[in-house]
Length: 73
Picture 1 (cartoon, helix red, strand yellow):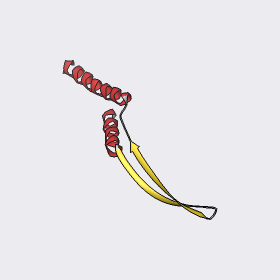
Picture 2: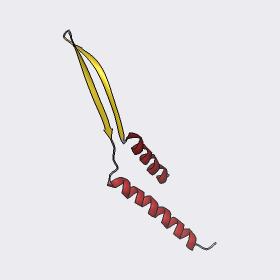
Picture 3: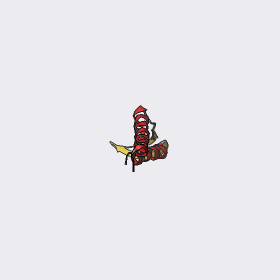
Picture 4: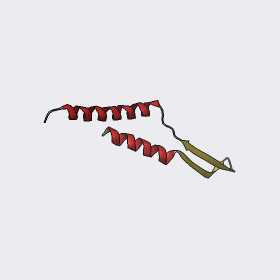
C-alpha cells in the first residue's frame, strides 16, 4: 500500500504544480463599492521526506524479493 501512497502523492503534485486562479469580488463598505481582484497561485514541490519514503519503498520491495529468492520451496 505504500507504493499507492507514493503514486497518489506524485499525481497530486502534478495536478497542482502550477495552478493559478484569478477571481474578482465586489465588497460594499459604508456605501462604497470596492472591486477586489484576487490572484491565487498554488506552487507545489516535493521535499526530502518524499524521496526518503520512495527509497524506503524501493528498498523494502528489493529486500522482500531477495528473501523470497533465497527461501527453499
